[in-house]
Image (cartoon, rainbow, N blue to C red; front, side, top):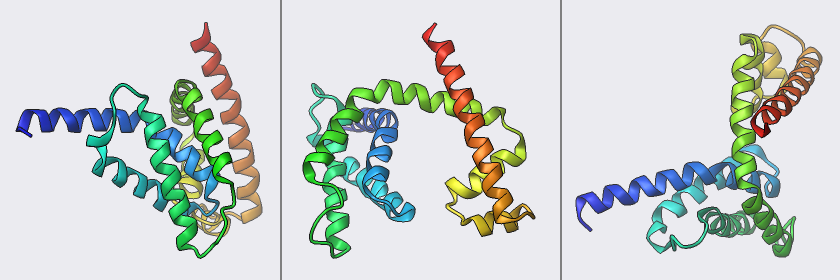
Length: 177
């Protein structure tokens, strides 16, 4: 493979992965309950996608192919955990993947709307979301970081999530018009 075609392949891989990653992430997080385990599985999927990209058939949807690989990584995760059976059946994992493939454009619009809405939040609200959901901190750690109580943080996060849900619906409504 020459240098130009290698760069072209990397660009296609990057573009496809960035479009499909939210669906892969949703799929993995639905199947794997523990946050850090799910993050590890998503990383394994990304590595597998990169290693096997030359096998991808450009005539087919990339997200479907990536979700097929994600299913294998989810099954591997449960096997490594020593579980003889999956929490979800393989049939259900297939159905989840199919649903995500069909909803991919909607998911991208929802993700963009969520990012716009988060940007509108006050700094303290964004900090709470980052600590809790991006870093995976416990309520107690979040409370200590913002000099509050865990109960108060729960209430604040509940309100922030409700505010975001309303904002996202409004943003999506604007796009539909």
